[in-house]
Image (cartoon, rainbow, N blue to C red):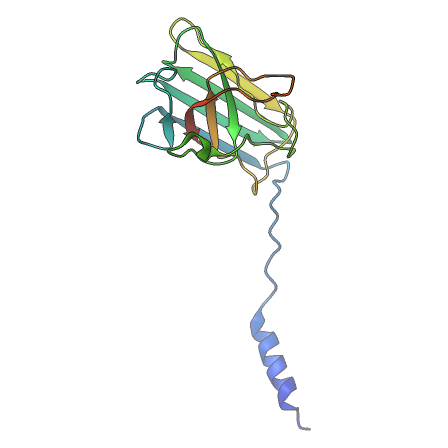
Length: 180
């Protein structure tokens, strides 16, 4: 019995193709953990940890941020040193990494796009002590997704407005740390 040529070619191609590729899943399973962090002294020339305003972020200022997402929760901690003493600042996670320009870090990271509040965004406002140091933390009831991870932490010139038409704003961007 003779096999038609097109069937022979079809069989040969199908047998060489191998199994289908696995489907990629962008969501993190509840058992997985995503850790992001950054620490450094704010400089004027390294976009990964950059100061945009030396009046509010003096030379020698530094910060450390950690983000841990596991079990459907995200915990974020921030420690700063060397900033202006006894002053309120805003701080948020942003969508993109830091850059030479303050706006390079993009908008605030929002777990629920378009929702501007501390349940969708990560707000880490703080007031420094007499030495210019402070700590802040936030806990959100959602896990990060691999396809949508924040790129940076931005320190703002003012505390975050919690109501009114400017809710979520915190003034100029004065410093930025790129998350890794």
